[in-house]
Length: 239
Image 1 (cartoon, rainbow, N blue to C red):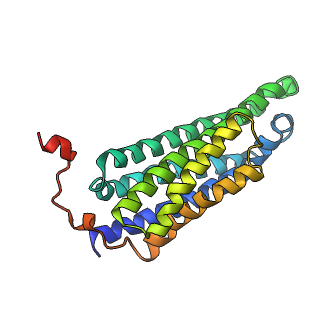
Image 2 (image 1 turned 90 degrees about the horizontal axis):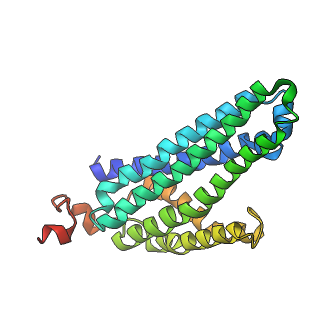
């Protein structure tokens, strides 16, 4: 198996892991997100929340992994954009990590609240709101720039993915980011019909990033044969 094929396999597997873990974790967190006040006042489903946290920690690893494994190849196409993709993935993971801490803080608050649970309900709701905003700004905004536009551009220009699929990223990424901006300014409801429709191309693009490289591998591209290309940016090499 060639090094490029191994990279495509890992890239596809890691992207599918990001899909599975992000969706499952969001579902597991619903008791805290839907009714934080009731969660700290009741018995709580702590193990469910802890499992969701574990999945989001796996999501962070997989997110950064998708950027690291593809970097040696896509930097041959455009090193600045390749580094930008890594940076976008890291920023997305920063939002995820903050959300994890907010959810864990709600669980801790339930353990420590005791008779003061009713009085601390407002604090629990604030922590749940932080988690909600990390989702709006991470997957709702940064993902459209990184996974959508930047990676879509790299795949389109390099030809590693079918260009029809890459166009989903080039179009869907900005659409998702614009939809996230609309939510930020309260133009429409988060997760409502407008944002839901705007994110469909990005969802299809990210799903293809998991399936196509895993099943078929990357398409034949000139950059796959450029093993000897300088590591530095061409502008620096020319000096």
